[in-house]
Image 1: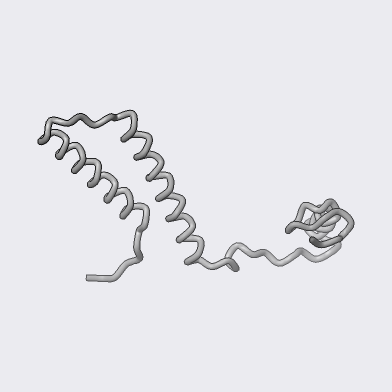
Image 2: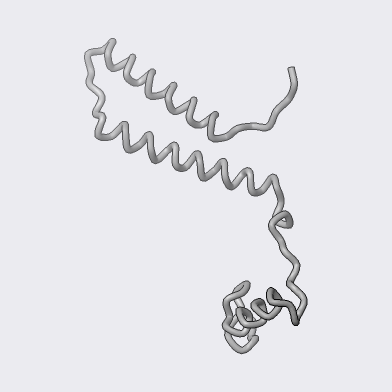
Length: 101
């Protein structure tokens, strides 16, 4: 069998649905009732947290340099735009006037 990367979201979702099914099974066998007003929101919260964790894990695996773009050369339309945005303090946490934090 070939090794593959861990799919964190699928693991969390499968575990969550297993827990919910077990909860309903145990409740049915013991004449308890499960409050759906709690189960449904908790399910969505856990799935959202799992999706966020999977996205962060995927970003950390790719590395931070993949999305990096070198600054454009001055005199080109992209370079002039970079200079204007930098002057306004809109690039990489810079303050107006070229001062750095």
